[in-house]
Image (cartoon, rainbow, N blue to C red; front, side, top):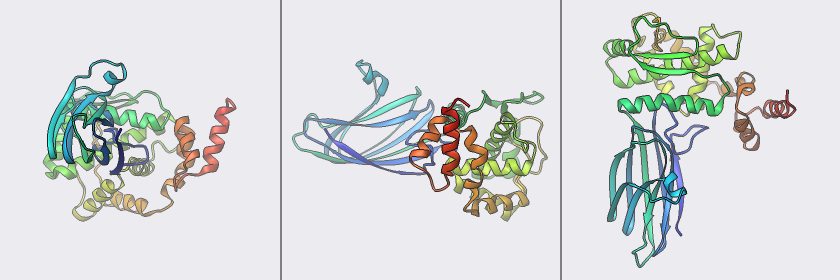
Length: 326
């Protein structure tokens, strides 16, 4: 059988090659070899409905490439191929995932007479309306993988006049349209919406955790910055803050009653975000707030493989409390 090695870009502390990051575009590269008469597979995890999967395969000779649903392979059923392509040297194609789940990219050299080397470049991105819904669902899934909290709803659509519940984040199409009209720059709009979405999720977490600073807007901003860094999106929020400092607030409007547009990202708020991102102790300083609400599986992972920001004593004490039933 062949073997594959992998390199990755754009990943945060919780991620592998999945679409469980938000804002969503991830890439990875794999290289390996497959012997004559053999085939090997590359596992692509957590691909969501609506994801555009861009694949580029470079090989040392003729090879057949197929993309299959993994669950069918595990059950021993005949797997329906999402795509199948044969070629020499170079293959490139794009496929839109229509069913969420894990997939396997199969490198088939069963008919070959010699070993084939290969390199696979994979890029996954969300962009369609169905992809937007998947993105919101996956964001909650990713947050739940990290933290303990009660159910929350993250919804998108028309919501003028609706009263959102305490555990609901509404992305109002009316607000999004107003932001596009006010800003005009799609990339800046995306970054602004991303920040405000993470910010409102952070506010819900603080409320559920009964944190005394849950109504402190500066504290909520700082938590959003921390979550962006932990999600591997620190550069995105850094770019947003730099742009606002240069050109002024992202919206001319005050806070809306519904939705995640939130307050205008003012120059003063952008300056604070930049200062937090430049603080090398930012993540460590937030550990007393976050560790008591982390999933046990994450704490165990951090205990075994601490990050540079991990406060190991806090992690160990929290695990000991849980194991003791406290």
